[in-house]
Length: 308
Image: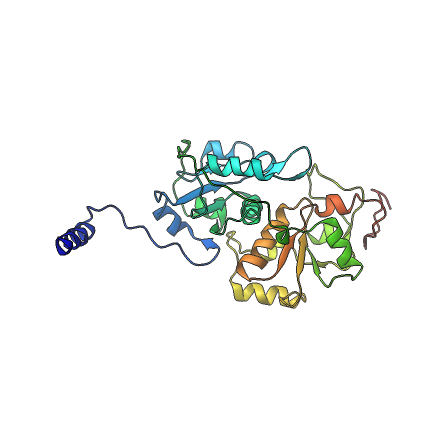
């Protein structure tokens, strides 16, 4: 009976009657569109879109994807903090995610907020988190399918603990690095004009600081230098050379920041998940640091409180 059962199972698989054979999850923190399209029906894969443009998901999304709104689902809107343990646990249960689920995140703006989502998932102990390399931009450019239907999934009963504080930097951690109490390298991933103080924030930004410039000692490596024209992330070798040229490697812990933490999440992902460096995301970023009374800033452009 055992041999007969084995023969039957093998035969059914060969002739295609035992269902599709799903590809093994790729090693590393990225998946490409080809792999994801072939595995959209895998019950152990959950696809989650985290975009910033309102209505984008509703107009069309990757089939079976579920929508997460970063500024309500992933944060505490009153405390200006990440989502609480209880709130995030409710969210992942609703998404049907367990600890052994492969979660593939993607979004617009070169995966900025998808990377924020990855940072939150990782902070709450979910290990099998991946980004769709190139995000919506690459998926659409490759003419892969979109859907407007809302996916229906069975909720999970997963339980989570408190967030991992080692992945997050606070204002005090940045101050300790500035004052040389610690040897952390601070990386400002904003544009050169933001870093110099020439502009306070990108056009159309609502979250602002009253001062422009950067954290003293911070090294400027704009996030965009880590991506290719099609939105995919550069190879590990290219990334190592890019950051090494700026004096950034795995010899010291790293703190990354931007304006509100979303672009720095992208660099956190690149440095920690792809290169394996010890990195914390300072999600308070410039809107906290630049608005804090009594802290020093560097402003080579000469702008002070909106004037000169």
